[in-house]
Structures are given as structure tokens and as C-alpha cells.
Length: 43
Image (cartoon, rainbow, N blue to C red; front, side):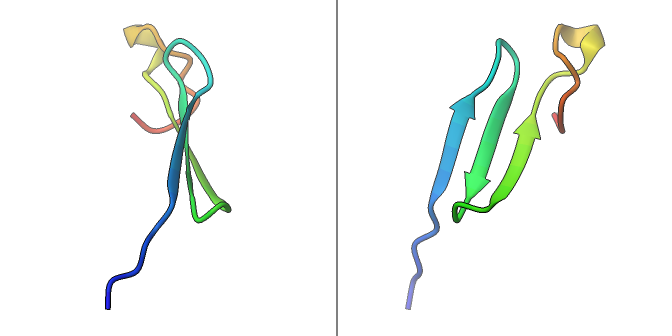
């Protein structure tokens, strides 16, 4: 039996995105400063 997992992605800034899984697990994804990002999360 397959389960559905809900994932939402939001653009928070020019290089930063936020992923939310199941409405409660959050992760920021960003580029490092030397690559033009704000280093707010994993690349």
C-alpha cells in the first residue's frame, strides 16, 4: 500500500528555499556566501 507524502517548497529569497514535509519537518536550502547565497541552510 502506497502512502502519499506532502512536500511544499517556498522561495524565501533570491537563493533561499524552504522545504516542508508533512506540515512539520522544515529544511532551508541555500547557496554558500562565496557562491552568491546567504548560507542559511544546506546546499
